Image (cartoon, rainbow, N blue to C red; front, side, top):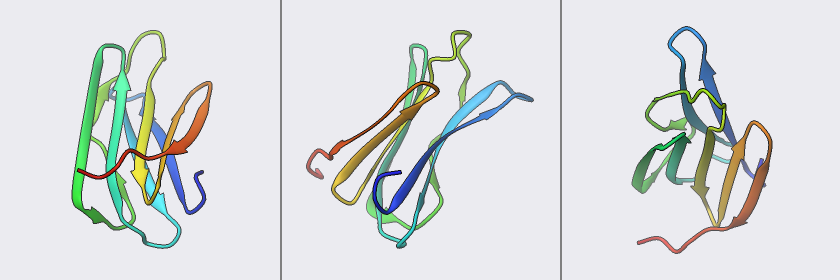
Length: 94
């Protein structure tokens, strides 16, 4: 959790896929949501910001379980994986 939003790394065993999901507590805008599984990565941008429930495309889960999920909301970049999480200042909007 990064202040007012939650970044989740979701996994579906039935289709061996992962995706990132963001829920905001205040309904604030989400600029980007991304996920990474092995060498594959996907980024979804929301130029005008998106309301609660933003998510990334699905990726096939890696065999090593090294997937990670990230989101930019407000002034924070938050990333999470099975083993760690990090919250840092977000890069400027383009």
